[in-house]
Amino acid sequence: MRLYDTARRDIVEFAPGKVVSMYTCGITPYDSAHMGHAATYLAYDVLQRRLRDLGHETRLVRNVTDVDDDLLRKARSLKVHYLDLAAEEINRFDETMRALGLLPSFAEPRATSAIPDILGFIGMVLESGHAYQAGGGVYFSVSSFSDFGQLSHLSRKDMLVLAAERGGNVEDPNKRDPLDFVLWQPSLEDEPAWESLWGPGRPGWHIECSALAMRELGPTIDLHGGGEDLIFPHHECEAAQSESATGEVFVRHWMHVGMVQLRGEKMSKSLGNLVFVHELLKEHDGPAIRLAVLGQHYRKTWEWRDDLLARAETRLLSWRRAGQGEGALDEVRERLDDDLDTPGAIAFIDDAVSKGKGVSRAARLLGVL
Image (cartoon, rainbow, N blue to C red; front, side):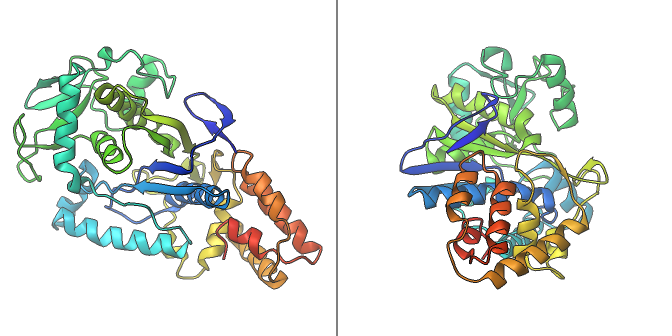
């Protein structure tokens, strides 16, 4: 199998051992899953299915960020407890992913379940000399880590722009460097707080994934990723703090998924241009939605259009009518081993159907049941 590795900026061999450890960043449960979420998690689902088909055991961990600025802000606006809001959205997310046919995760740990792990991890980073205390919080010093930028390969100028856009708070007066990032922060008066050696507070954004990955999978992960908008700052910061704490390689292979757009702009909660999966499921079959997404290559940025779903429904009907069989199975395996080429795999299944062959096993490898 060959997959694109973000850090190496090339399609390279992916040859893990018998047990494959995988971590993908999960949701912040303050709103419903949209097509961008679906595209990300479906890519990792197809990867898992092919790895299992090859004889591997996969252990995919997907976290839940149930304490975070966005969640707390939304709960405050709704005048509800942040964990009540999280529970409601987590339930809806799980139902949505089941409808799309996702395999169950090896673990779905919540950030709030890992406070002791997070505190211990921060202690390790401090002891390694890569963090400092200031203003009641703890910050990672990027200048102390010579490999900062190993994943994103961005210039300092570009890093500053993206950090400012993506919650990095580059103007925080407690920072020695605008690119330094928070590991532990004091809580506002109406926010949850936990006791720590550095005062009451709550975790920063990046620290939970490092702590949870280490707790669930160990210090080094075979494959890690999420949407490409997480490359910087989130995953860059994860790698820096993890390797500073353990002295070991954090991730062997980085895999990121392209953005889904609507009317020319990235689909995101901040822009409000969202297509919610649970709304589509009211009128459409889960496997058809899955097929519409898998018709796009996972690394491609693409535009959501309603006609994609109509075409997927027609395709799904033809596959079902073709019946049981192993038509196109070898070709689908070959396409998935070539950087997870799901559009190419779908084309081979269509061709087999046109020749009167049953394609149930090939469709099942794509998770289309």
